[in-house]
Length: 425
Ligand code: ADP
Ligand code: MG
Image (cartoon, rainbow, N blue to C red):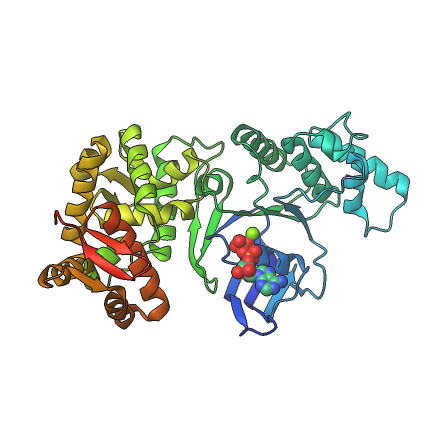
């Protein structure tokens, strides 16, 4: 099949007044074939929306080219239309008028625009709602309007920016199915679809191919063909193995969890998590009472993977959990902790801290060796700054002191800026 769209060596740098330039996209090479459904995955803030806007010609790239049907694009790309996460409807326009906006640039009569828009409303399941206003519609129906507005111009390529992310689970699933059906059964002339998403399952369910972006700046780190017949069964082993594969690529690139644990023990970076949050997280895992896929864990609580990562990392660091290839489970210590009383928990936490965080051992040894069992905080700040630099060192120390206080290893006097060894230690 021929290439509909081709990106060559796309770079994007934003120049922000008063700060240094920041490069968001680096050397992106990408093509979209006719008949293809491409998913673009990547951490939030990595530049997915920026990439889509460049494809649509809504913003220029800093260098590189976008071609549609072999021709370089200058300005708006005539072959694409966009669907947004936020629906982006005009509240003062009716459903029909919002859809007609998709034909704004076409030189056709208003009557014909109206007629075409009515047809599209029928196709996207909004027959009878043409005179309603967006505020009268549910989220799912609003996004149907958003999709209708994109489809009405009969684009070769439909660009979707997290188009299902703002919808509740069931609504999103319905809309995904409906859209896939329209496309697979050729009820719409759209040839190819590019879907930006941070949902791994969504990508594996819908796409023929997925690319995974890294962040800071975004480069394509992996291209995966998803060769599963449709319709796809989310519970089949083949489906799950794609999900696992993508999952482990994404998390490894973001935080090399296991590497970090083995290699750099003495310069550990402590994830920014309070003892209280960690406790809650371990209770939650204990409640689930099973080994669970990390992405499912996030899905289950409607959270982004990224919100969970510090908790996962901190719990693994203290050996309360074990993470292997995308699965997380409580260790024996973790189970014990989750089931323990408040006092027992403090004791267990203390054990794990002393055993697995070398800097905690160091602090305690220093305090023990002093006859008055105290030390000014500056001393420890200095030690941390030497390893991590001043700013991160300070943060790391704050976190550790929080954990040590919870574990009743030390006490800290804010005013005097003095750290004391707890009497029982
Ligand atoms: P994603 O869609 O993957 O979450 P975006 O493409 O929205 O990421 O943004 C990527 C990065 O580019 C972010 O750090 C964002 O702050 C930055 N960015 C996006 N648009 C602009 C802009 N117009 N000016 C400066 N920085 C921007
Ligand atoms: Mg985005």
